[in-house]
Amino acid sequence: MPEESRLKVYYDGACPSCRRDRARYEQWAGEVGRQVAWCDLNEYQDTLRAKGIDPEAALLSLHVENERGEIREGIDAYMALMRRVPRLKPLAWLMGLPGLKQVLRFFYDSWVKKRLKRQGRLPGDEGK
Image (cartoon, rainbow, N blue to C red; front, side, top):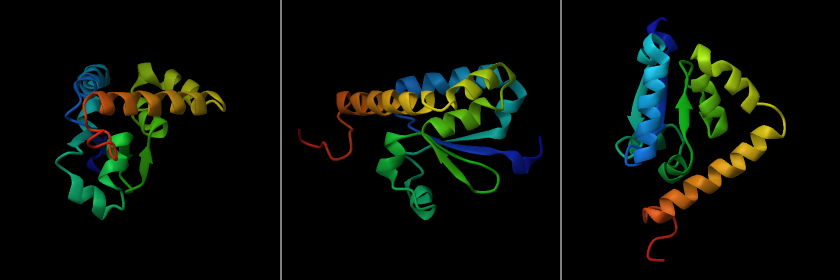
């Protein structure tokens, strides 16, 4: 794959399960995984702001930037990553089915908020 086909993934490097997901993806992706630049959103806040992404929004949802600078977030970001790995392509297709995508988004959003609240890092929840 040419250099311009790289993806940039803005993920929560402070999240143990996010780091495990990254490692699992890299293992499954093999050579394709080398075309993914993993950017810990906790270190790339200025970059995110420059792209019009609030760092708090990035904390609440995975963001992926393609080679054209287009940003996908949430379930669409996961699908963009999964489509690159042959064994995950069918799952990405399934996730995109009408209705299922919305249900997955609901559960994903709920899981992220619970995780961040448990860690004391939920935006807008300081001191509660």
